[in-house]
Structure formats: structure tokens, C-alpha cells
Image (cartoon, rainbow, N blue to C red):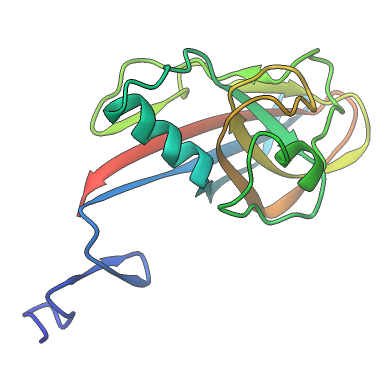
Length: 184
């Protein structure tokens, strides 16, 4: 049966997709600013995959007395890889070819402020990667451990950028991650 909107009554339009009504949607996006010589040379907003491991973590913490993860970290990757919902903290560094081509010694801390308007973000304190090699960065991810290439953490989300970033020594990537939850 179609409702007045032209959709079936049990469907919700999200961008160009029509999905069965699900109640709550959790999703996010990475905003990446590429700086060279202090000037922004490109900015993009890329949707992500909130992986199964991340969704299970949310459910466990909220509804089953799971242990909260107090600090999350942003990592970047250099493989031409499209993240899957089945990726985990144990395999994302290898699957996506995590990049260590930056001056900072660890993945960058995702520093957030209190949630507002059904979202939480680090837009006031962007994760900054100071590139120290000529390379290509294809995407970013949010994980619970700071050590580059660590396989012990929990993965929340990952994104392959719509356009890869060709970076050179002293470029900077400023990455904001925003996660939202909404009733649908």
C-alpha cells in the first residue's frame, strides 16, 4: 500500500535509497580538509560504514551493562579498500592498509563535546595528521586504540573517501568524524 508520499507506508526515504522502516538509524560521516602550505586545497564529506562490531558495542554498552570505551581514535589508510560491515579492530589495519605516513606517533584522539541535536562530533578539535611522505590516503576509521596497526581495539566506523588524497611531506589532513542517531 502506498501512502501519500508515494512510498509504501513501511518505507523511509534516506537520500536516494528507500529502506524498510527501522525505528532508529545510526550513521556518520568523515569531513576531511587537506591543507598544503597552510591553505585548504580540498574539503570533502564522506559517508561511512558503522560496522557490526561498533553497533554491537553500542547495544552492549547501552542495554547490557557493557564496558564503555572512554576514548576513541581516528586512523587513516592507504589501501584502495572499501570498508565492509564485517570489518573489526582486529583486521581493519591490514585490510585497509593503515597508513603511518604522518609525524604524530599514534592514531589521533577523537576529542568530542557533549552530544547535541542527536549527534556527537570532534569538529571543535579536529584529528590532525601531519604527513611526512609522498603517498595516497584513501580513507579513515574510528577505533578504540591509539597504537598504529594495533589489532586489539574495537572498530566503530570506516570510510573510503569518494576521492583519494595525494599528499606530500608537510601536508596536513584535518579529520572530523560526526556520528548521528535518528528516529525514522
